[in-house]
Amino acid sequence: MTRMNKLLFPLLLSLPLCTLPIAGQAQLVFGPGTEGTASTLDTIVAVVNDDVITHRELNTAIALVERQMRQNKVQIPPRADLETQVLERLILSQLELRTAERNGITVDDTTLNTAIDNLARRNNMSLTQLRQTVEKDGISFAKFRDDVRRELMVARLRQKAVDSQIQISDQDVESLQTQLAGQINPAGSSGSTEYHIAQILIAVPEGASPEQIATAKRQAENVLAQLGQGGDFGRLAASVSAGQQALEGGDLGWRRVDQLPTLFADAVLKLQPGQVSQLIRSPSGFHIVKLLDVRGSNDPRPEAQTATADIERTRIREALFRRRSDEEWEQWLRRLRDEAYVEIRLQPARSATATP
Image 1 (cartoon, one colour):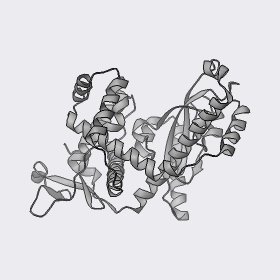
Image 2 (spheres, one colour):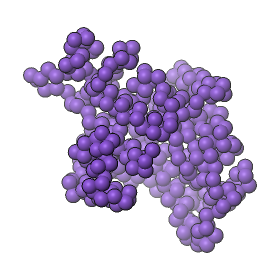
Image 3 (cartoon, one colour):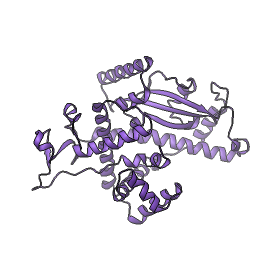
């Protein structure tokens, strides 16, 4: 997979969603329809508050996801599972966009052009080369611009709804400093070691009943049992995980101890590469974490030898902020989804053979 594809992956999944048709337009039909109609009319697979998601949009998104999964060497799950995962991502994307709009969040063309220019520079490309790379992936540059604008709007929404409310105290910093000072990993190295981890999340809705919690736990235990019998972690994540990285095989990337989600830190440090944790309970649900790899255990960062106390404290404060931001943003999105009116009209048995 090219470096550019990795960078653009979140943007490629932000596909445009249609609003409800106005009176007098008949380009959309509800439900599966007939064989003859399906070739000329689009169908609605989900209603999201006052918006809809169409079958054509879903199939377009699935095609992009499948291509990215092949490039990432993630096993593609069964079609029905993939439809469910991609549809959920489209639903959440639509809710984010509408919430940003309701909060008066906009991105003007000047800001958008600056962001795209910076994106090109970070990839050592001219604007023309960036356009060619995007279009080579089958995406029009106008569509790409819309995707970048949407990503910027969501970033501003996150800043307004979550990040602006977070405060990291000196006591928080000192507490983590103390924890890291005594933190020894299985290889005997310090907290500068980086861990490549992935997760599967079986979600529990906010305010869940005991029955819902028990059902989610049974599902998580079933997934854990499949992993114990040699099941592929990435494929299972893409099939059942409610995490935002599900379609990337649950991959959370490389992180230092101070960057790990709070609930994961102790479990990760007890794992060897290739091992998976037991169930980890959080307000979001039940997590299963896999340690993919470890690096830096015998090669401490050079800057760690000379960093001043102030620089180290700044690094820890930033890591704490990112950790808390990630955790609270995930909770915020889950509440947004739970409080929305969402009606799923997708029929998996039929859609398995549908074409865009």
